[in-house]
Every structure is written in C-alpha cells, then in structure tokens.
Amino acid sequence: MSQFELKRPLRSQQDVKALVHSGDLAIIGPHALAVYLVINAEKTFPTVKVLCKKSGISDKPVRRSLAVLEEYGYIGKKETKQAHSYSAFPSVDSVTANQ
Image (cartoon, rainbow, N blue to C red):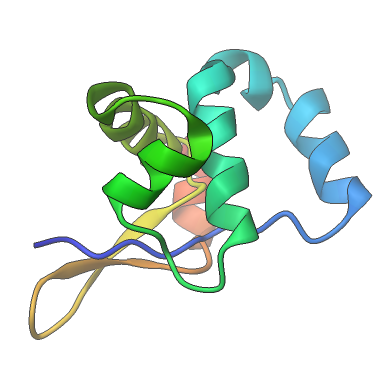
C-alpha cells in the first residue's frame, strides 16, 4: 500500500501565482487542482475516499489526479519499511526533469 505526502505545499500567495504562471495549472487540469487544494488543506495526507468526498470528484479521476500530481512533482514517492510512501519535498532532479 502506498502512502502519500505533499511535496510542494501552497504556503503563500506566491506559491499559487507560481502554479499559475509556470503553466502547470493548465497542464494538470481542474480535477488535479481540486485534489491538490484538498491535500494542502489537510494536516496529514488524506485517503482517496476523503479526497473524493472533499473535492466532489469520483474515485477514478482522483486516482488519475494523484498520478498527474506525482508526475509534475507536487507529490512524490519515498521508500519505507512498510510500503512506498510519498515525500514532502521534491528532489532537485525531479523538479528540473519536469521543466
């Protein structure tokens, strides 16, 4: 079972502007944005069920959104003893690879 953690939190208005001006918003789309906003609002990474309920999006689009957010470095995997999990901050390699 994979665990997720937020890599690129929205902490300020500058972070939101960077999301828009980088072009990522247009690429990730409205479902991934909604999922990303729910993730940012939670203290711990929410389950898919919670993401569905709070974003108003069904299971499959939420799961696709998680894959898109991972692809663009907004969430990321990290190895743990129990299972794969996702780290809170991107490595330099993952950020530069998506630019």
